[in-house]
Length: 308
Image (cartoon, rainbow, N blue to C red; front, side, top):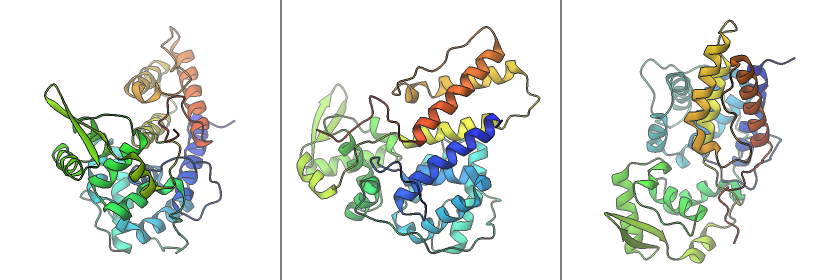
């Protein structure tokens, strides 16, 4: 019988393979064709998986070396700030290897060293796929906050949001505010003051859709979901002799920390129980079910969709 860690690693590598294959890595399973894939979040997560699946690691690096011009170093740096030290260290080794084998200059923590790697040259992006919307937007508008913001507006074309709310796209508020102002000046966004903030929404939805097509159906928050995945994996790596009480407290803290992200999915997060062992077993089973669904393209009922 598989341990929690073994079962979780299998599910997470399956998820990563499917997302990477949509982007053009030489994989087999494509279960996320209707999703907008987030490359920077996926890169950080794959680095955290490390040598759990050496072929996944190597083929993803092959892709990164070939398509580095489509990756935002600024966004990588900003997303890394929210990661724990285990993930930062793993990313350092992964990024150092990318930098050593190509022209990338990704942020590398001090002390990080590249490992032995030979690119396969198999990665090929199909820009006609809905899942690579972010890459198409970057080809159109450049690699930066402009493309990421317009992608976010495509995901929720009726939403009205401020610069502060839009920092979730992975750029600094000052940068976002400037780009929003410029897009408003160009007539692509509407602006409306609400209290002491300016809120923006798409003004020319059909025109932007026509440029960006084909559009995916779903825009999940992969940054938070993959951060949750990495945190769950680190929890699963706990020593075998860890007490049930310590394990139960840790899993409860994990689920509560990501409660807002997980709330959009249909199955309620398990609540604490008097028996710490029962709670740990129920919570760990819930985590496995969650990622089994996510890796097989289950979508939350409230997932953002571009469908009319």
